[in-house]
Amino acid sequence: MKNLNFRHLLYFWQVAKAGHLTRAASQLRVSQSALSAQIQQLEAYLGQPLFDRVGRRLVLTEFGTTILDFAEGIFGLGQELMAAARGGEGQRVQQLRVGAVATLSRNFLENLLRPTLGKPDVRLCLESGSLEELLGRLQVHNLDVVLSNRPVVAEVGRPWRCVRIDRQSVCLVGPPRPRGSRFNLSVDAPRSRFVVPGPSSDIRSQFDVWCEKNQVHVDIAAEVDDMAMLRLLARDSGAITVLPEVVVQDELRDGRLQRYCVVPGVFENFYAITALRRSPSPIVQDLISHRKIR
Image (tube, rainbow, N blue to C red; front, side):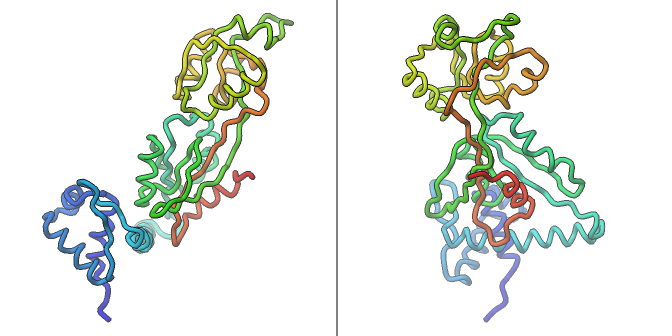
């Protein structure tokens, strides 16, 4: 049996991460035809196709995903070897690549990742995007974990591992009320304006069901998907806002906002999504194991 040609494997690794022959060829400084030939040779050596062509994109086959996992381990160890050679074993820095959906609370993210930021041997790389964009990057191992407020289900070619790591109560918050004046839901809600999460939000769906069940009518001033904007409107609009308390934790602490009540039975769930890997990241495992809830 011939020895595996690691240049072929390196080229496959770059193409899988780029998702496009032209882009990978530019990065590797080789012609597109030469790169395509190298991939075909590797497929012939391994005996199975590594990619399916979807339009102009190359999408990993299930077998290709398995081979990419091995390639990640091989070249990841190579990078660690070079880091150890340059700085010594005790100087080695591990990279944690986190994707966060754009609608996620920045306060929640900061609270979750703060322990990691205090580790001198860990370099955090954080990027934001839509859930589908981030899952695409996770599939080719450009990310170690995706943080989301929506769960995902494993499917063929995308065997996600989705773990709920936190759950936050949803509250009604608004401007501080006069001293001694308590918020009365049945009296105050009908004569107030509300800022609520957008229709696609799971919080919104739960809140609408709760309002219908309890015969609470709300006058909606704004619907907002982005938690950062929801936080600004809660702080500046004077309306009652429906959101998890963590989103406005600083404003509640310094008295700019007041929590009127917790909405019973309405929660926002937070999930950590990882891809099945032969050698899971120990940093990610540590992050998830300390926050995992049932």
